[in-house]
Amino acid sequence: MALSLPQIEERLHALTVVQPFDSPHYQDWLRSTDIIDFLNSTSKNLVPVLVAMGHAYIYSVLVRSSALFEGYVADIMGWSLPPSSRWGCSVSLEAREARDVSLAPPLEMTGSKILDQGEPVVFLRYFEGRCGKKGYPELNQRISHILDAHWLEERSAYCRLNELGDFDDAVPIKNDEEGTVVAIALAALEPYMLLTDSVLIRLFDFARCDHWGDLVQKEREEETLHPKGTGIHARLLIVSDDSGPRAAKLRGFQVIGRIRSDAEILRALKGEDSRPERYESYIALDFKHRSIHECSCAPDKLGNYFIPSALPYETSPAFFRAEVLAKYKQDLDKYRVDSRMISCRGGWTLQYDINEEGQVHVYLVDLGKLPHAEQVYWKAFNESPRAGISKRAWTTDFLAEFSTDYDPLVSLKQALAEPLRTNDSLIIWAPDEEAISQLGHVVTESVKEWKDAVLTLAKILVDGFRKRNIQRIAKELGCYNESLGSIKQLCCCLKATSVSEENVETVIQPLLEVQSIRSTEGIAHRGEPETRSTKIHFRDLLARCDRGMRRLTELIDAGSLNSRSEA
Image: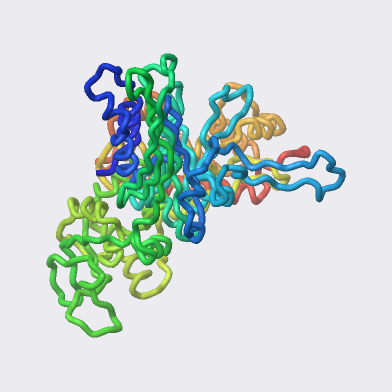
C-alpha cells in the first residue's frame, strides 16, 4: 500500500525513537531490520529522496544505468556527501583568464566515481539572512520541467495537474524544526529516468545508540547486507562496550529502477494513458436508427459516416438537465465555461449546446473523451430529449455553416474585446479579461446562478469604466459633478455633446440596471428579477448591455467624447 508523506514521517519518527538499553528488544533494534523494511516499502510509490531527521539520513542521486557495471557496489559504498546545495564555479588560485575558471557540477569528490557523474534529485539551498542555517529543499529544475511540476506554498509541494484538473503532490516536502523530508512519486519520476536512461541511487546512513556519551568502544562487528529483491547494499556495524552490543550504524545504498515498462511510460508521455479505462452509457437520440435508447460512449461502440456498421453515430446527442453546468460555473478557478465549451484547467474540454427546451446536449463521441469520473457526473443529469439539438448546433456541426443566430453573450464578448478609447487615446473603459472569460449564460432558474452572473457582468461593465478619465472629459465639457459616479458622469458627458436622448438611454440604462442589482439595495435584498424567469431576464440584460456598449463604441468612434487637450 502506498504511503503518504505524513505516514512516511510517522514511520521515520518510529525509526528514530531511541530504545532503552535494558529493553529486551535492544539487540533487535541494533540489527536495524526495521530500517531495511522501511527502505524496501518506500521504494515503489512515494519515495523519500531526502531525509535529515535525528540520526537518520537519506539522499538520492540519479546515475546512468550503464554505470552499474561490475564492481559498482564497492565503488558506491565508498560514498561520502552531504545534500548538494548548487552548481558552482571552480577558480584556479593562479586564474588570470576565463579559461582558468570552470563550471563545477553539483556532485564532485563524492567518494564514488559513479556518483561523481550523477545528478541530484533535490538540492538543499541556503540563503543567509532569510532561511537561517537550516536551508530549504529545491527540486532539480530539469526534473521539475519534465514533470511539469510547480511549487505551491499552500500545499508545501511541487504539484502537477491530473486529468480532472486537480492538484497532485508529485514532490511533497516537510521542512521544519523536527527535520527535513522530501519524497517524490516514482511514477512521476519514471519519464525522466527513461529519457536519461538512469536509475535512482538512494544513499542512507542510520545510527543507533541509547546514549552516545557513555559509549566506550571495545569491540566492533561488521556485516554486509544484500537483501534479495530490495536493491539494497549495506554494511551494518555494531559496536560493543563492556556491557555488550551498544551502538549500530547501517550505511549503504539502494538501487531503485523503473517499475513500469518502457512502452507504458512512452504511452504516458504521449498522453495515451489518459484515455478512460471505463465508459458510461447514456439515454441518447440515435438518429441513425430513429430511436431513443441507452448508448455507450465507448469509441468501439460508436460508428461514423464513413465505415458501414450497425452502431449509432458518434455524433448522436445525449441530453442533460441544465443543472449539470452548475458545478463548473461555481468553480471558475478550475473551469472555464464559454457559450459552447467547458474547459478544465490542464485537463479536458467538452463541447456542448443548449436546445430550445433548455436541455444541455453533448455528442457521445465527446462524452467518451472525458475522464470516467466526469462521465459518471454527467450521467446523473441524463434524461430523455424534450426537443432536438439547437438550431445553432445543427447549422455549425452538421451543415458546416456559420450560425447567424444572435447570441447576446457571444456578441457582447466580441464587443468588449478591446478598450474604448477616444480618438486621442484617452481610455474610457478597459476590459477585465479574466472576468469576461467567466461570464456565461444563466441556464437554470436558480436565483444564485442569476446573482453570480449579474455580479460578474457588473465587474466587467461598471468596474471597467475609468472614472478619472471620464471626469476629465466632463470638466472640459463643463458638466463635471464630483458627487457623480462614472456611469452618471458619463451620462452627463453624452448629453453635453448633444447625443440624442434615445442613444443616451440605450447606453446608460442597462449599465444603471446592472449597477443597481449589484448594489446593497439590489443583489443583497432583491430576491429575484422582476420577470419570473431568471434565464430570460439575464439573456435580455445581456442583449441590452451588448446594444449599449456597441452604441457607446459608435459614439466614441464618431468623436462624441474626444478630449480637448492632449492625453
